[in-house]
Length: 277
Image 1 (spheres, rainbow, N blue to C red):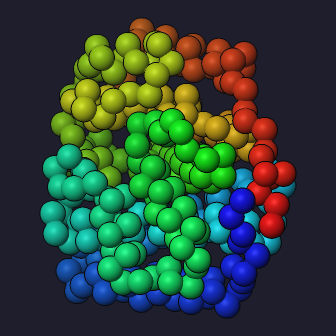
Image 2 (cartoon, rainbow, N blue to C red; image 1 turned 135 degrees about the vertical axis):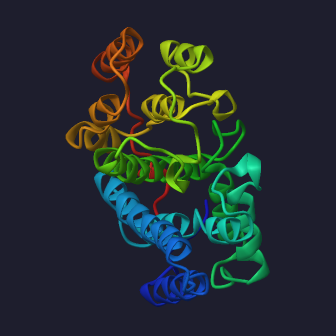
């Protein structure tokens, strides 16, 4: 069992300060670039809030919550360098932002205040946060925190995207939409994935509407009841459906998702007892 008791407020203050100063190095005078970087900085801070909220609902406190916050604070660290270098957030057009973030943490010795076992745990959790699924053979502790991070990350991405769709004038091409064409069709492979309650493979995404359906399909990768409660309370799925053109496919997608949420979802119990400090 890893020991987290020494993760105190002083260490957290240092890590938060390092993150702020690192992100600030990318805030150039160019307005569009600066606003895109700030979008990711604010996203990381909100994911910290989401993971703390989920953790508290699951019975975590103290150093366990602070450890969860570390994973959230740095989960998208690679996004800043990715956008500066490639002007895109699309990993397959640039490089894996999770792996890039881990490399930056290592090169800058950011986590030297943690013992080696915890540093390695943070690196693994960050490297898993954007994978289609979590790997087999991992420890319960790693999987627990990785699932918390994936849930917290999705909650804020849903928040950002639904606000964007409400304010959108119907055009596409922004970084937040990954420069996908705004055409009406939904690809067969994307539709079939949701019908089979599977996460949509991003390689099957061809249009902005495919991307929106992919976001709806994230519901099948929600791990904890507090996360599901937030999705329902904030109407994220309905908001995305309203941003899609009316069609029989969309009606069917809504029915499949509604049935899953009401009848099939079984949130994972808190494993806090495994993580006692």
